[in-house]
Length: 509
Ligand code: XMP
Image 1 (tube, helix red, strand yellow):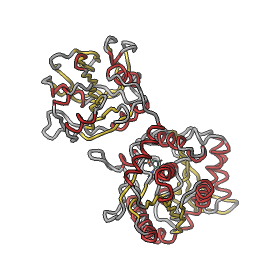
Image 2 (tube, helix red, strand yellow; image 1 turned 60 degrees about the horizontal axis):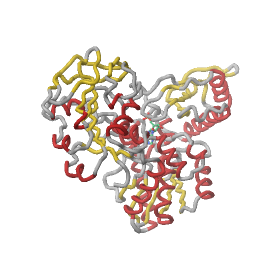
Image 3 (cartoon, rainbow, N blue to C red; image 1 turned 120 degrees about the vertical axis):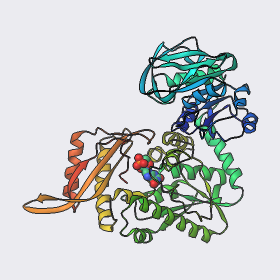
Image 4 (spheres, rainbow, N blue to C red; image 1 turned 180 degrees about the vertical axis):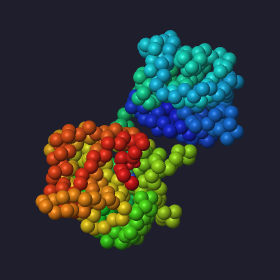
């Protein structure tokens, strides 16, 4: 193993990649693996430490994920979080029992002489979310934190380097969660912190080279941050073995197709093919209103186009996609529920002939941006706001028509221009217009109008898994509204979406 590595052993919780990401943020490489990974594989890998994640189960349920207790005797430090903590107690003959559910921000009293809590105040605000608790400690353990309702909010056997916390140090709601994780990494596991984004880039370039060998590769380039970073990374690995296919599906924003083509052909020595497939996509989508159906159709059509292009090039073996971690989790992995099938994951037809290369699959958006800067991509490109693969199709509610798409394009361009002019493009994570399928009555001059409603959406977010609606200046909203109704025919009403994610999602479909 090249870098010190922490294994995040996945027992089915929602925050598993977030734990891995917090560890990477602290400068230590980490990987997430299923609890089904054999013990021998874990032993052989030489991890510096292991973190058991949370999970939705109760350790006493027959189908709950468990692990061979021998993992606790490998001499590798272990930190159990939530379900992982209970599992550790259960594996070592402690006792876990149902409790009154403890959920939300909770005051926890910690023992500062524990290495895990070293340097921290005795009272902490921690995030709890559990229905079982550790009612009897395993032999050799002591309690190192408690809350009003939980007699064992943390326990440890420092001699064996086994630590467990009932709360979630990885989420921001835990005041000093970052310090606790760092204490585990640096004080307990003895890590030095030898990992940074440049290492990820170098290692991944190496891995891609080995994976792909001497074959030809296609990249699904959308011009967005994710696929652009993936393309440049693969190009660094295999040079002109790579051909980027940019599919103009007729669902791009105003002038976007030309801009992407210019950027890649002027800045990079990359085989670049632009496929004009607008008619093809719009025909397939005619009359379709269901969002999931739209995504599936677009996903499949994309792959068909790629397969055809691949056929023309001959002997292509891999398809590069800019899939990132939130795409994976929201399309459903193992026990996590499907929220939306992001077109680049859930919509992949079973019969696809190309193998996938997805170098950014474990990263969050802001990590992808850091990787992009490491690779030398221009700043304006790295900081482009995300744009979904299915494009304007998921921002045009109901059936797509060329006319409605054109209205949306114009309204969206006005909104984006106003945000840029106000210098807000970096503080607002994502901002766009949506054309609703609703028409309403208005008055223009002396005449009645019956036109579409445009919704404006702007959110503040860094991880795109949660988002808060952006408090844009009212004057800006007023100006955008005025301009849209005056300059875009077919619109007589503009509304602003003030819902956060959850419970809404960022896109409307
Ligand atoms: P939601 O709407 O799920 O969006 O809150 C989270 C982020 O993902 C983007 N998004 C997509 N990206 N293919 C993509 O590549 C998709 O099908 C897709 N759907 C949503 C969305 O723009 C936001 O940044």
